[in-house]
Image (cartoon, helix red, strand yellow):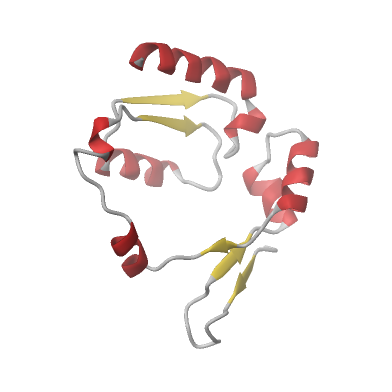
Length: 130
């Protein structure tokens, strides 16, 4: 589509940043959100730094003492076109949360496509785990 990669380390090296294009945002990320939300998002979009597996291994150290001490809830977007159902369930399987919830009628940007449903769900989760 209209997404762009940059190769700041040279053309023969892996890409260093990524930017979502407005057509991709409107058709794949914000497809169920109000048009003004994806319009604003496309105007505010900035490059995302891409990290290698080696970078992540150095930066991200998880332990039961730190990460495991937090009650985690995985919220699934019913109509997410970015993360496939297989990927979502693989993430859940690999790092099981305490609870899994799904927001019906939502796109990838749940807070834009179903803000009231998400707010109610977050409130329910907060009450349960507080």
